[in-house]
Length: 114
Length: 113
Image (cartoon, rainbow over all chains, first blue to last red; front, side, top):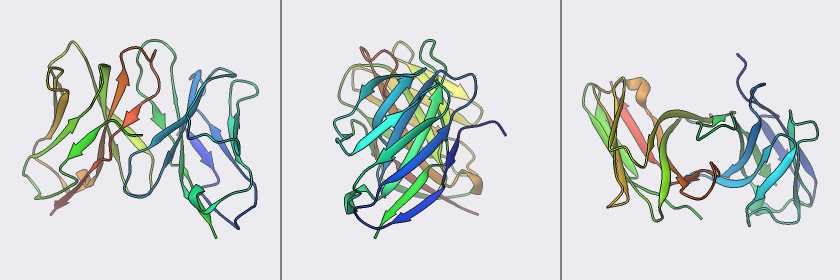
C-alpha cells in the first residue's frame, strides 16, 4: 500500500514536553496538509505545503507549532511545550496540485497529554 | 472554525435501508466533498461535486447540491454493516485556490445487521 503514512500512530507525553510527528505523503503528490481533529469534531485545517513551500497557516497554529517539508517529500509537525489542549488526532493528507483534487489522508497520530 | 453542519448528528438504520445525511454551509464554494471516517482511522474521499453541478452518483452513493440553499445531501442506498462510519462534508471556498478543506462536525452512521 503506497498511501499516506504517519508516524507514530500514538504518542503519550507529559505536559511541557516537545513532540514531533512525521508524515510521508503519496510520492507523486506535491501538496501536503496538516489537520487537527478532536473527539466528536471534524478535522480543522492547520497548514499546507506545495512542494517545500509552506503556503498557508491557520490561526490555530500557535507559535508553539512548526511544520516543515524540507525536500518537498515528507513533512514534520513539531509542538513545543505541549499543553493539555493539544490532545487530539493530528491528520496528514496529500493531493495532486492541479485543479481541485481529493485529498488522501493518513490514519493520523493520536496525541495524549498527561 | 468549522463551516459545515451535518444533520443528523447520529443516524441508526437497519441493513438494507437507505441513509440520508445533510450538510449546510455558509459561504460561496467552488466544490463540496464527502468523506468517510472509520473509528480511529483517517478520512477516505467518497465523492466531489462542483458548484455548477446539481447531482452526482458513484455506486450506491448519490450526492445533491443546492447552492441557493447552501446545502448538500448524501444518500447511501441499500446500506451495509460496513457502511458504519462517520461521514463529513467538506467545502472548498470559491477563492481559496484549492485549499483548505473546511469540514463539518459529521454524521455518525450505524448500520445494524
